Image: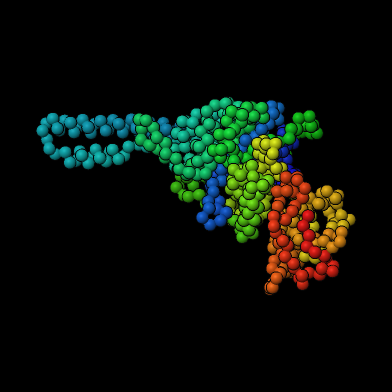
Length: 537
């Protein structure tokens, strides 16, 4: 998945901040984007959940692990993007300290009054008095008025024990962020070894914390965003020690992995950044402060998080991609060895869509996520997915197909041919420049055929391509696709579109029909004299 193509789809508010920080730091763009998304996740997780379809609700917390060498300016990027969060967290902690001081004073006064009432009760008892009713009620009222210790308002952690993290998560809808630009100590410690804790937090599953000398406590409604930056060799060492457990437990499948291409050796300076140039970053800081304040207000009021939904078009796109990923996890398909990642793909994409939606509608968070946002989130998830596959692939693993040519061809067919057939040779001569070469065009056609976007026909040595009625019942001119088959009877039936996609995606020589499957005739529905017979590469 090409990063530049995805960047063009991002909200302008994100692009402006990315461009500015890239100008200032010269850090890899993907590193900047990943850290930016983790910051927005901190904002979103306190405000919204998202429901891609009825009966399914996801938190908007995200987990990131960034692999980058020393000198890639991880700390510099973190300093800029986290500045507003650090300030807000500091103010929260100062407010907590003031509340705690008031609590201590109130607790001492309460204890003094309690002892006074107890002394009075004992004195009356020693005197043989039986008139305790007034003091009884006074004591009961006093016990009910015991000051409550304020909940810690810490929101950032960078190195903590498992026990301490669990303690911080106890309370009313706690929202935390585990952030570190140098996470080597975290990976070398014991925190991540409790993978069940992180999996439960990511999935919003309640947890009961049992203590030897205290009553059990419950973690419920808590949210945790995680962004850990680490040098590749340190992560590889961690993976060798714990990788099998982390993967089998489901922890790795809940993480967006990112290993951006190094910028070292290409970081030339061309001018100074003026104060005027800093406006996108200043606007971003203001947005961060405002959304964090909204989240705190929501918790204080006791309101539930808003639940975002998908527009009808976005939901159709979600379902289409879900089915595509599900099919790819079957035996022999390209996700066969990555089923744990594939199973979390759509939830990851959905969470990412919510995060993009929040930053795109920061002034007023609309309740519905549109198709274009969902599409961008899917493409970003594919990008991070590729990074994960590269990290964990075996020698026998399939590779993720490059869909750039396929997407270019599909758009060109849709915009220019409106369901009319076009010869492959014509595409070579007149089609998009990037796929005029034989190999690129063949790969694009194979992918679109496997995904049922097109139908192919062959007459002698001439191959024609038509948009599939299944995926494109209506065309760019608003008319019905002439390939929409109706009233099919007799021996004909629908044409066969299924194909063994793994043979192409694994680079083993093209797409073939599934075993023992024949292609039904569609005589009478098309002009065979013009097009020839239905063809599969």
